[in-house]
Image (tube, rainbow, N blue to C red; front, side, top):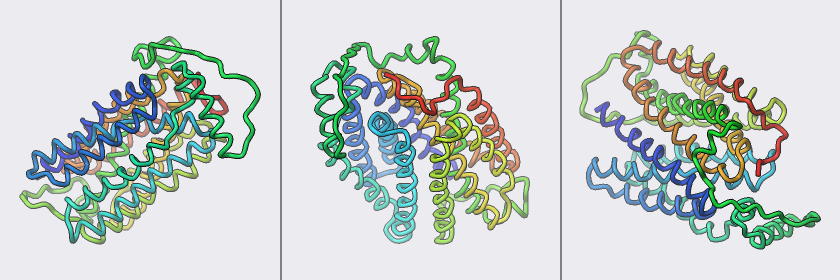
Length: 390
């Protein structure tokens, strides 16, 4: 039964790993709006189909296709190219809002209607978003890079009018580049060290998804961590163990830990991106070790998830700021693909290794957080107060 429970997230993450660089390349070549719209249509289609999967094998395949769609990262690139620095971090908070609503939806739907309704209802917000994509403007930075100065100017005039502001004096300079989205550009002398370090930091999705999986695993184990300490005895069962209402409520509390990252995202404009990432990863390592009895479990998972979410989201703020327009979406896409490697590995630690030793499992995540904190400090470029690169 454990193998079946691992297969679902594994195929989902494999899909995300393949999808991320594909959508990043599409966004750099054909536009942010095109990449995002097609990506969301794809995810909506397979998300609804997965709710009607006739057998478990089909469900795995369809969720893999959903993962391929979710792997699209152009939305981060798009709002980064539109919004001022202080507003970018606030937008990331909507990830936390979505996570909370998903837990509330599961609490309401799963006990009575089952997983099919949960998957179907979870896909509906994307249908609304796809409809709104018609009014979504293309990034003026991309239009300028593609040689479409008039279109870029029209978008800027529209934005100025909507905000009641006057257009600044001057004209847009055309910088047309045909070879956009080249992987080799990420390893130019200026960016190779940043790229490798960021790929490692994105691989720390291992820790983020690990704490998410540990939440349900440790809640199902109850107080076994406190009584047995070294390991959780495996049980042979062919039946799924459903989460209770108390489990969902505790899961909701730990999911609310996504919101304190707002404080971290506000602090990055004072501390800088590198120090903020390092602080979050170091604090995650410190707080993941004392996971024992049920009450302490909820408290420390809350703290751990708050810091790992904060660090992970600061990486999302930093990455599009450090790369130029022609490779920005590709950099996000390839980094997100590397993140899926960590996500693919983490179920074997959070669900399999946990059965062997709780202490070793927590030690692995602690070590990853420490190394990620050091990698953050080694990044060669600080983007605080630095404009987006053209």
